[in-house]
Amino acid sequence: MNDTDASDRESAYECFECGTIHRSASQPIHCPDCGGQMRNRETALE
Ligand SMILES: [Zn+2]
Image 1 (cartoon, rainbow, N blue to C red):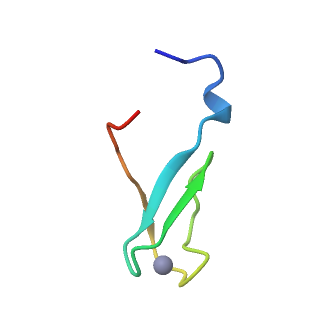
Image 2: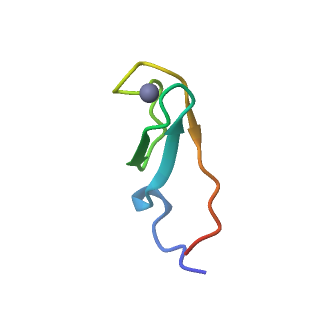
């Protein structure tokens, strides 16, 4: 486990509408590309 600074971790968020993936430390409210709803991608890849 590497949990030194949780606030600095980036997560991937995928747009429901257009499928665009954005990486951000905080969840985007709307897709910057189409304004659609974003969801957190729960990837097990490290
Ligand atoms: Zn989108």
